[in-house]
Image (cartoon, rainbow over all chains, first blue to last red; front, side, top):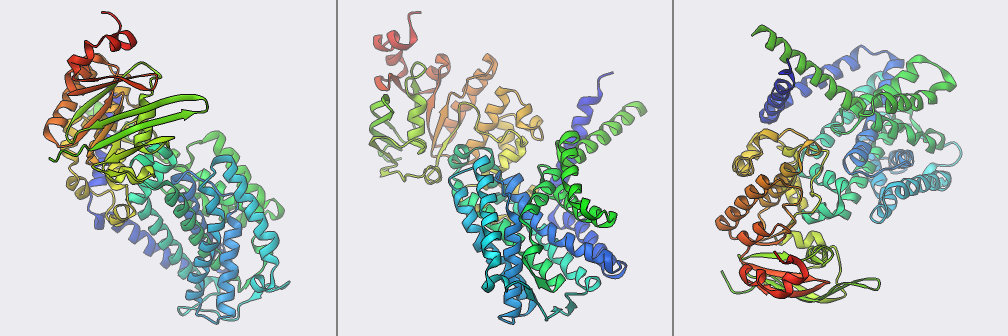
Length: 342
Length: 252
């Protein structure tokens, strides 16, 4: 009668052990194939409107990966990441227009500029945590939007910055059907690096820090450095996300980066759930694509908030939690069937 | 090994406001020794551990490790080979046993943490790190993919001990390893601890309330009461010391 639970346990353990013991190149085949299919499909099939949504999604994926590392792994929070995205965007535009650098290089430097800006937010994180940190990041972001984004040297005055250059490694950066390919490649690289960090000792250390400061320190982990490093990484990829948005539109202006929309990034990470970045990436794509496809005008902003409320109420484990739950159900059904056939 | 003690505390005083938690405590652990630390609740045993770990800064006194003064930051002390366990289990409860073991061996310095950026989590890595023996020694094979929060206290404490041993301690600080364990589990713990001490050159300093366990394991004992050392000596000497009987053991 009640033989199912232990069998389920064994099957699941076997599954996990098999996953862990596969050589790295075998584990790489599936994601590589999926990425290739995605790129070919996005570059050839998508029309103008859908490609534009895809580029937006790629930009948000970059930001959300960093925020996933910050929130789910390092146990910190930032409610002001749109400001970082904006700094990355404006810096990219400035490097492209003022310094006349090639766009890919401008994008990279935009990411580094955002990293520097994150130091200002990350340093308080060495002293405070939880609620106080959340409010501090919100205050910092509001200050950045209210002050920095009005400075001509950064934001280029009331019209913003127009980017005449469009050559991005041979792709046209202002033609969504063209730019979707490099934008997705950037997003995939960010996803790859974030995943690798999560699986490495750095990821383990970040989770130790999130779990308990004293235990982490007793492991030899420099708690402050790790907390700051998590902020810096999230700042870098958020800056890259901002740069992608700016290159795609061909201009940078303050209203592209409303500080209140930071909440959408946080919503994606909370809906994604603890564990791998998979859930957060799915949530990010959904939060970009659903409002855009539904064409509901002013109610766009409602989608993210509503989705978050529903997720917290009905699936507190987020998308990852639901996935895990489903896998266990499948394993238990399999076990049941095996038990019956004997 | 040399005659330099692995750990030497001299005249440690700790105050919390007007309350003195430790007063001029001196203690040394010889290299390779197994020292037991006993005393009633509130005697300052865990405070002393927190001073050694670097979590609590003493008002006066010095701590040195293998002959040289210890650095201030806790993580730097840990990197010297000072490994400790916690009374309420210092593990990541939302992670699995396997994830906790991996975390124990892959963290500590950025260099180590980055070294397996591309091969993290692979089976080769687990083999190299000697996971097999650890699983056997601590009887963890059955529980590898269970979350720590789903384990009994006894198993969780074994996992914590396994994590500690995987980090190759020179000095292992154990804070009440037997609390929450059944008598059988306590016996098993004693066997594992004695085996560890016999087979490696690590030194152990253990806080413990279970007298049979500590009497059989420790070679030397120190008894604290009200933040001061009231007795020290071999287990037999301490057990028969009238001051210790009055303060802690009671008649029986």
